Image 1 (cartoon, rainbow over the protein chains, first blue to last red):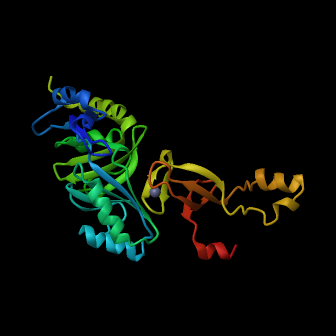
Image 2: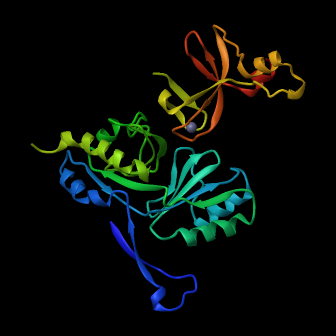
Image 3: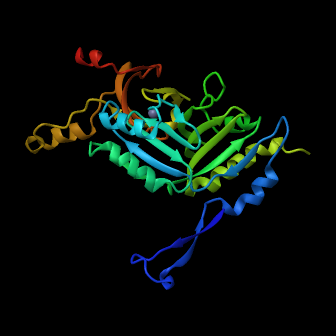
Amino acid sequence: MTVLHRVESESGVADTATVTAERHSPLEHRVAEFERSAVHGPRGVRLAEEPFLTQLDLRMPPSGTALRAVSEELGLPVPAANRVSGDERQGLLWLGPDEWLLVAEEGRAGELLGVVRSAQQGEAGSAVDVSANRTTLRLSGPMAREVLEKVCSVDLHPRAFSTGHCAQTLLGRAVAVLWQVGREPEYRVLVRCSFANYLADLLLDAMAEFLPG
Amino acid sequence: MLLIRCPWCGDRDEVEFRYGGQADVDYPADPERLDDTAWGNYLFVRANPLGTLTERWVHTAGCRRWFSVVRDTATNEMSPDIPSRRESR
Ligand SMILES: [Zn+2]
């Protein structure tokens, strides 16, 4: 997806200082390929990119007052290990004993950073905008779990992994954050931009057996 | 392949981890007073038992945390490194 957005000059004066810049997502050149590879029906599976999601990396002492305040301000409970609180519009993912990833819709980094930092009240911890670190792949369809299981060693059976679960793990040779967002099943895979093409290749290859004919 | 239990993330494949060697190798209190042999021992000499060894591992492809486990070098059986057990060593 290519999005045009305006870059204002520091001084903010004069139209002549306003330029238009193109923003590119790592997989925008593969949209048509994703569409061609989509399989529908009871043995269907689809892959798409969800670019430019807002991602904030939060590090805080797990028992501190800052974490509680941040959680209250965001309206999201602190998730247990390997879990997500909230939903795909605004979710808090557990990444480690003192680390969380706040994922929200595009363009909310500044606002959310403000909320988190003011709730932290200067206590120990950090909140960093890491939106440009990863892009997001969305894998959905009745066969999505079968596809992921070819490249992932985490147990994804519903008895062990279901909606609202997340895991930082290896998909093939790439480190990714895996997040089940729906029962279909539907997954978000957050992957570093430079690994996105590799992971797309891997998933498309794993999907190929479900293509008709 | 070993299935290693990260104390934070749970059971994961060995390929997600990196090995950090013997645990509890303390930095010398007075390194400037060590002779070459003692410094060399600190840097390079490690226990190599047939049996239990407390080791450091890092969950590289997961939470990226370091932790200790007790591994039986003969069977690769692993158990958590429990602090109370530590003190009795
Ligand atoms: Zn871990």
